[in-house]
Length: 485
Image (tube, rainbow, N blue to C red; front, side):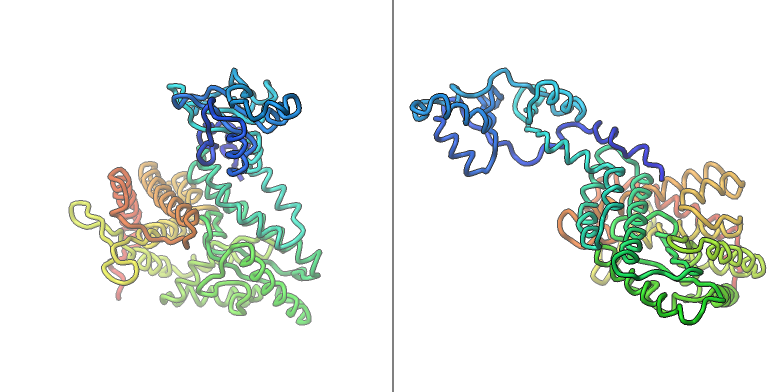
């Protein structure tokens, strides 16, 4: 996974203002030391900044107070804060980098650093604990935590920090594609670690000759936060029947454990725990042929979910055998691609005359736009459709668009427009998910156009034009208008 843009070094390039937490507790130098101690006890803090005219002039720590009590116990009641505060403050400005703050704290052997605005007024305080927490947000650190977890409960606690990790990476300047790949990487890591824990702690394993497959967005490796589980099981035709109960136990326990660490179950039950998504290689081939030769709506939905299969555990050879079968079956059934194309172009971008964004007119999401239906679905499925014809069955949507440009299926201009549209729509979706989770709400694919800035609306319209570009290519390429209804 390319994480060069989301590592410890890039996180240390955050501005210190991004690391300040909460309001700063301050006091006046003329305040009595006893009153100051009362404030520190009430606020449960180990240090207090001393200000005059909104500018920091000193700081008092618990250590300073301890030394005064030890050296002058009889004079405590008469002392003012100004008498005991540490002067000659070490400060840094709010737009300085975290690594500069780290250097200053190490150089002067201090545990907190005062942050100022450009005019010298107080902005905040950063502590060595803040910097330590920053370092624990790096992908390498989290990966090591996941790898060393010994229970599903431990993984659940790590998973609960994913929002902070993604926010940290966002502030570090990670792009949308990197963030999506980061989230997918961690979801894979959680899954494989759960499988290891199941084997070691519970004795539950997947028999040799079987594979656990990720499907849909997880199969493509482009998940956003709290994406539902989509999975399946495939096993060799000659797997002994006495191994079937072990497959059932493995599937049901894994789905349950993933839910426990924060990965929701699929509302449509497209999961390995569902017997309809556990089959032998031959049975999967039969189902795939049925879906491809009889392209009715539910078959196309099932195929659309299954086509992005990826082995997360078990025999990768089974995945290759299924992918080869899909490619061969598509070549034998030329009408399938046009029918899939017709299914995709039905999801028209919600933009009317004069660039007006069209929202839903009724229901609980009245006045909002479903980002998935507005364009994410059309681009992911459209890229997969063109990829099927070109023999490109794996990778993210971005990967497929790039590969199709290289093969000449898409022009460089069209590929760039579609890729930019996809990136913006996913970015918009991810931003809204982050906001909802931060507010304690359930993430949604819906967005209120009235809550968007003018700049966002303009970019949204451009993205919808990119969706329309891909749909026109698909409509023309597969002669969708000539398919009988």
